[in-house]
Length: 410
Image 1 (cartoon, rainbow, N blue to C red):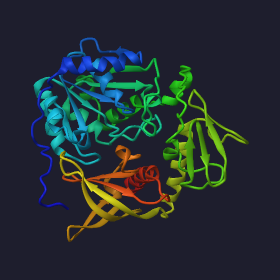
Image 2 (image 1 turned 90 degrees about the horizontal axis):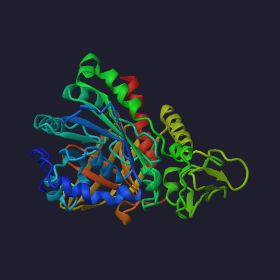
Image 3 (image 1 turned 45 degrees about the vertical axis):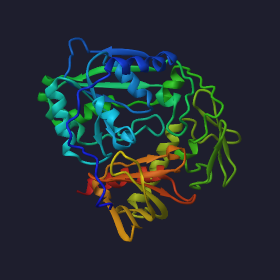
Image 4 (image 1 turned 60 degrees about the vertical axis):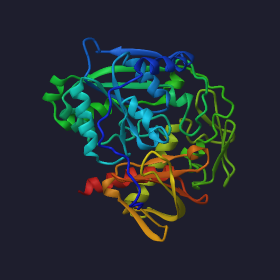
């Protein structure tokens, strides 16, 4: 696809961070307005170079990371869409570009350069905002990467960022008292004494979090009146009648348009049925119920959907290229996109056995609608399905469950 279009230069060495003090000053209003509290554990004597592994819930994550690293030089790993129309700026401040959910050896070379310079490599291994404030799947390679780099592994786990600005409802909800914990998880000596699998398990354990449980425990009230709007993107299946793709939300109420059942979302993030049984009061429990349903569909070999769609390519940071109408299929074999652009047919195939997760967007940029973001090492294609009878959340869950299935069979 687009053979004559220049691709983003992923191999250009990342610059050392510039404007560090200015960037930290610019993030102060956000940190102060949300009364962010940072706790450091085991960080005494820990100096760069080190790897900073951060959980990912909202843009505020970056502000807290800058606060946590004080005046040290940091290279952030950023997805290519983050460079859109501002490549010069992100390169100038030392960011490292990555196409999501690809196995990119160029990234390893960039991280080795950061280590050689004695700086901090900030990585968001979940590679997307959490959909409902709980841990997204981590790549199996993070343990191997940590062992190979042989420098301290530091985690930065933030709480309250999803509650303040959930992926499905981005406006600032004015949450105060957000928290973050910066921990030296593993020293080089510990890394050398552990296998990559042991390191992986240690990192996965450190990444267990639940923003809604944190909200309830700390009695953080969200008075934003439209707090449930967009939640139907995550909770796409009704637990009362079982119908998919007929959920809607308005204000603080979530509703099934098929059977009429409704749930109210209170100021502490809990759901309660307006009538009858409350199937799930905890949002992540509803989400995991959906995952279980998708898992059964996958294990029975019955998962599959084909949709008419529109494709937008992002070969570089200059802007999206409308590549026209396409047909998107997601089934037991993985993703297939077929389309026609400038007199030529194109096809993108991503096998389910090679992709452990997928990036999705809700109402992308406020005008493109929901989409799946499919990547190869050289291309990125945002695919926007048409109609109502689909859920990109279900596609994301199915991607993870398909990969798990094929991994077991390997």
